Length: 496
Image (cartoon, rainbow, N blue to C red; front, side, top):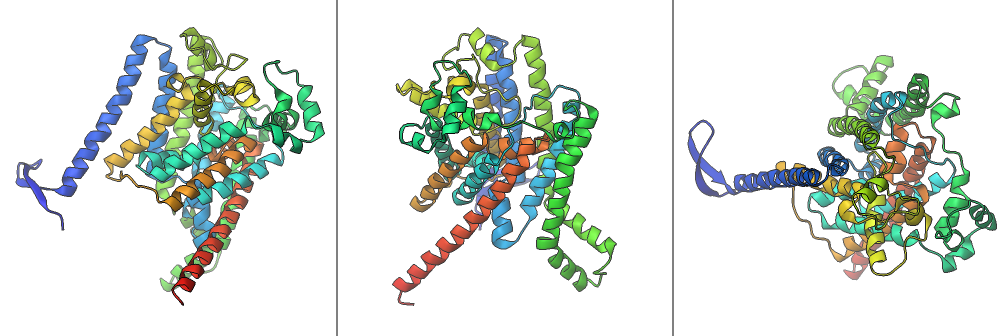
């Protein structure tokens, strides 16, 4: 029972009591306002110092929106597949698919206008294999890359461990060589050597370097519009190729399969109990619609995410035109932060929502400062760089995402520090390891390799998603086996 802690005057002038829960809620909302004020102070202060910092602030404020949306919609790919395969509940998966559709609908006009900052990824079976690694990892860890960020904002220490594990794994894996080179096909080594990369990039000394330059880069980067022979930045290409063929058709088929396998039986049983018709096209359409609207909260969050992601592209592209550069590496060099730029003078600057790469840069930057060379590989040295996290645009986005989730959690009184046990911490590390491997093999995570790519008509997006689903299924099966094995041991120790 709640205990009163003080008398208070309510909004209508009536004297009442404030409970401990009321006081907790009030303090949480003060913290939420304080965090929001802190981000505003950072944006205003840095802009006054140098107008170039507005570019970083754009990443910051969109990151804040992403964090709020993720926390509100409980947007988690791990939960989506785990619930589907473990307890046959498809609500979260359906919510994510609907969110992807909504994002695609908002992205299409941006693509047609030629103002999109999105770039397609190479298409091949490597995306499926990468997705399998990632799917296994996110189920084992209990959260995907994006959900681990927002859960960190809710005070979940396990989620923070997952982020650290993904980041460390990526940074170390990107530079792995030596014994790993024994597993590199000769064709990869030869093809990588022929790419003419700068001498500072020791391309034939690293497994991932040879995988990228000798294999992945040889695959075509295609959107569905391009597959159909349509210009990507045309109305037909963006709406017919990318949106209709690339998103709406496969999403519709996926939802239909989910409806038949996981939803239809329970829906018809409910109608039968209510005395309503259980046959006919009208009934089936009603059932399909009930599936689509089953997770309104995730769908609403997805709509806002889609709008925000599209606006993010527009604003970033506008600032690039205004300041006269195509990559933030030029901006950082202009304001005197040139340490950690790639050999091309670039840094990771996607121009839209992305996670995992910037977190890996944190680790790469720390290792470089410790004297461990990290700028001699393709991942950091040739493409993304390892700039100081304090002025890395994508880092501002991830940190603000955590902050946005914290603001939303605090405002709704859902913030709570959750300490890990040794067992959950172990699973977080192992799951993060698999996700880190999958993210590097797939050139992205559940956001960058699936959500954003599918929504922009990238043909590799559904391949990663297929692998991710297969990996999640394997992860669920593993945990079922582990749980049963653990329970059997406990019962045996009790003599049962």
